[in-house]
Length: 363
Image (cartoon, rainbow, N blue to C red; front, top):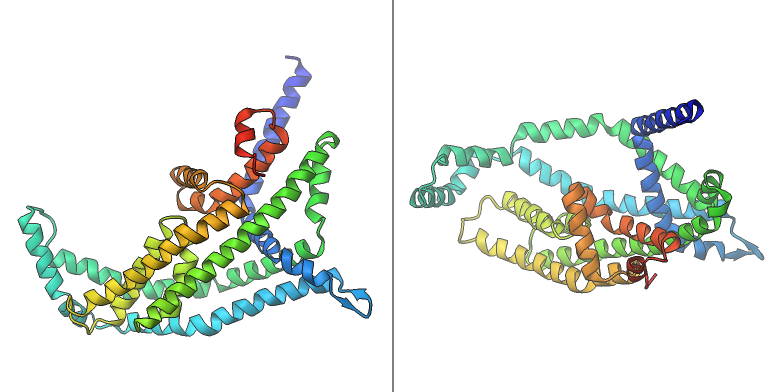
């Protein structure tokens, strides 16, 4: 290898390392941009409708259409604060003012039963005091106060991030070709057509996917909230919203949501006798989450995943499981959009391979 080639190779490696280091240092910007891309994709249908609106034979300008979409997002966010924050504040108040001694007394029966079962099973290391410590840990006031302090101290950063996401989203909506222009400057001319095809297909498929996810969250929220309200479970709206939001995590999301719902209900019903009164309440909550889960598994997910990203449900299941093993919960959340993008790229550049043809035949 010639000296010039060695120098160029070394400079290339150094540049790559520097780029990776710089990207890591400003990773927060990439997160803001990714969130903005999602919001922009979800706002595309509304933008398309608004740009067709005419006022005195003049179309609504892109900047005004973008502003309407942003205001719509802010309106939805204000509804969230209006309905859910007071409920959340009441629940925090219940936790902070909870009588620990009363709680221990109410759980005396289950604790005694657990102790007896441990003895029968010859399990050592778990006694009454250990169980009590675990229960007290669930309502650790220091944790609650520390969490609130962390939230309050991080409000400045949250506000900056919030404004940054809105700012980026506005320009992604207003300047439809801004991403294409950036890509054009970085792409060799011979690949421009393929890259444009990839961007167009990605926008269409991911727009449908993210809108589908928003519909999924809304439906799960409605099912759980209405179901719990029928059974007079307090904080039904809060539990329903959290269930819908956590349901974004495939497969394990509903389990987390049900655990959250049962935990809130237990804290709100410490006065009830266990198991005579609390057990039926828990069964009702599980029944509601069971209905929501079946609706999600057999109706919503096939429609959202199969129709929006044009992939078989079994194919999506395998991808999500593999992503979960590689990158945990974050991998499961990002699995479908990432897989969709990779399929689009493969179709454009590797269509000659039989495996790629099979995976991308519906795109």
